[in-house]
Image (cartoon, rainbow, N blue to C red; front, side):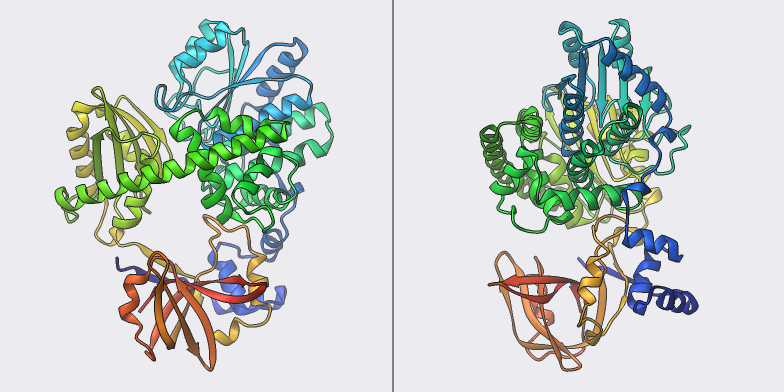
Length: 565
């Protein structure tokens, strides 16, 4: 797929020069900061040196005082508390974190995670009745609950109070809970709106910590879970999320959490520096796997256990389940590609709505993401069974899938989610009308230009600017993620050195020279572009990020290629 290269290097030269002087930095760094919306020296200093005291006052969040008061009453009256969590990484880390916090207060709580296949996403009637039957008087939902109006009405009728901690988009009406903590509430003046569910839960813990005047080490030890949940949920890594992830990942290598330690060991990354990449591609899929294919409660047990042997046993199960999940992913993705190639017209089908009996509901979200990556179309995959379908939606830049689903609401049983990812339930008979309605809307809003993926480039550089401490300086910008991606560079007038080779699973490996400086380059899954770079080829343009490659104890710069011409 051809990419639309867009260079962001269009800033006022005076601004760049001011940054260079005030920060004693290179023009390249100044441009990168400006590209991330950092336009003054104070913001730059906070960016490079985030501090825990930069976190916002949790009581600025609407409903926080009510939530703290209700929990204080529950603790005083020794009421049974049930933490009701979602089954993904964000939900399970939030659940585990709250359980650990209550344990530190000598008031152990229990948890409930709905069965993904039988109950679906969010608070269920079954979960509410479970709470009643087992004598729970307070439910705290984490990473779910913002649209559970009927279920929370049922809880009230059964004399169970509910506190909602969520970050998903609220509907037109808030649930009738004792307190609803969600920075996306229209009446919430909290200064940062993009917390993950685990982040909202941490703000509740932060408020309780302040209220009860607890030891600070309790909070610090929970940051590892906040970091894993936030990075896994792909929230913007700015403001508080940046602080959470930076400090949490710093702690992760020496974690005292037996479950996290066992997970690092089973994946072989216990002795390496952990970044967001390791969380997203190694840790998160394993925590997610048990919820996708079975009981997500095992992930909560892993993250809360005090038994080293139990931690190792559960980590081994997660590893095994993840291998099984990958096999199902591959089979489903191959099937989906065949369906699209045979039955869809990518000129007219702006949104790909695919459905089939027998698809595993636990993997359709992952496969939908891979379809978006391959075809760059908003994609909804629906697994049907007994006349009903459960769907996962993924979108592209510029197309708000949550708002699109909202406008097609009459075709669905229910839906919820974000701008770029959502879930839904639907009667099988309604899928054709839903597909047509969604595509009609997309044809009105999605232009041909929007359907060409953009490759955003920070600036053009020459190889002689990359030597020295340049990588060390770039690494100070970590953690990388949405709204603070690893800087992307363009270099032109390059020459290929030697013969490029395709290695592994279609990875393009070669050497490239500019102004006498030779660099190693690798393009993962870019083997199909090998025809563009013959041995000795001159005039090559290449877009890449800079990384460090370690081989046999020796570290060298490596350019990870994103595209080349």
